[in-house]
Picture 1 (cartoon, one colour):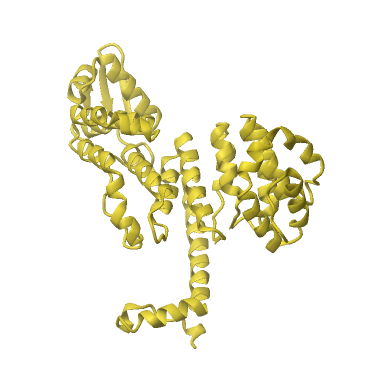
Picture 2 (cartoon, one colour):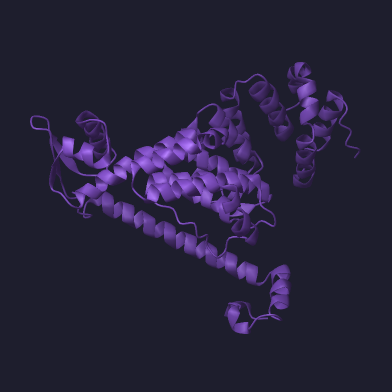
Length: 383
């Protein structure tokens, strides 16, 4: 079929002609990705086009035009969230499959600030990926969704996936994910390791740090524990942080250092005045120290009580005894999930061990390395 992209009519014809099966949908997806200029130029004529398409039959093309015309061009992203989620679920063969609509859906959730809706698809365990770029964008946008919801542990997991994913050349997505991974690590963990895991691609190992020098300087300043050093680093690199749209996260990094310094005080003192806390962590006043302590109590970062009469803070032990029904259910649920993931990974490993392409590559590699460097093929798959 001749993929002519000169008119809206040809666009409709392509959507109607390439909506029959999975192979055609893959071809249609490629065609639509190259039709952005046409859609932008013909935006006034797009609304009637939807009337010529049946959403149940031409769902991919219908939703693509809906996304472009009603969401991006009209700057009303919230209108596209529900329809795109419906299409995404219909396009999935299973909840473990990543579709090309996943990144687009997360973009809409970010633009419309529907973070909780975005979290609904991030709860799925993804094992089937068609296009690597879709995985990169899914994890990157998903990380932003989790940052918006203050679910920093999940954001770290998703951003880590982008940074360590296989890549032959460094990608802009990986660079931006690395910068945010640094910031979220400091906020959530109070530290960041510049050493990347061994399974990280050589392209990422060689290049990520070169593109992230201001952020690594921030790590060094944070490690000193001195607010003055950290604020000086932020000031000297503020323009770069603003250009990267990361200044908000950087400010949270500064705020988190105050929290870390207050947490260190709990390891030394049982009681301490608000004035002493303010002096120790370089806050402007006892009132500001009180606000930080109250917020940390609310978020579960420390356990303490404040005596409003004399301005004294009493630090307490963690009251959790890990013997409640809720905690036992949580632990059991975690164990069940780990067992499920272990079973899934074992199955994937066995499948890969029988894959001709993998065996061919492993055979070539064995000419250069000792046999002991490789895991043996499972006994049930001996060849």
